[in-house]
Length: 328
Image 1 (cartoon, one colour):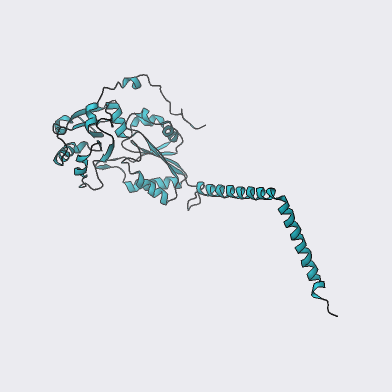
Image 2: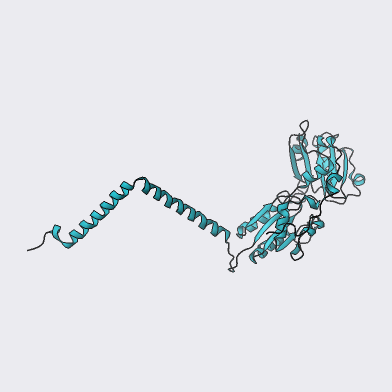
């Protein structure tokens, strides 16, 4: 006689298995908050582990050769005075394997770089390019691929007229990690050392930074817009265009009596300042002994210039050795 389906061994096995699952479910429900807490704890641990894996993956970039990639730190060297370097900038110089130096960097900053660190000059000056921009970008990638800690030392602040975006774009495409350490830009440095406020409640509520050299030699500023501005205008890299700037601003509606200041080698011991009006400025004679780099400030703030006693911060400054900021 055939056995009923309910009495087969398969039936009893499944029946017992269901009872076990039911008992387990009842136990979990009885646990209540404990089960919820355990689940939440597991989710929290999983989230933490996931984040850690992502961070580890991002921090352990590997080149196609199998070597760990190095890193690039863009450092602002300030406007001229080597003591305007930030502590963070000095630390980066101390920890570097190689430093790529721009033309505008004061040679005195070499005192902060230990002798064993390699230095490569990649300066670019108007009409005098020792290394092209494309070559500089490739050097950054190549040195990083060798696992080196590279410092790209730029004059002033790296993000102001220093072609930072071009270099970081190349590094991003090559998956090279980088950091940017800001520096004191020429506008703030030169203004502070010459006693000219960049803003003033009575006459200038804003400041505009302008490059006197566009990407193309024949590139012109929007002179009509600049002439109508009620703010301080600061022109970078314009020593050879001072007369042109004066003429363009006047011809586009700015008052010929508007004050202008030209500051040569700002924040350095050889700083020179000439203050005139747009109409009275004669670059050929007034700026005959200017060497550059120079900064141009146009606006009524020039009339607010005061005498600054630079000896208060320059006379008894402590000497800082090259290894003063070495990493522990």
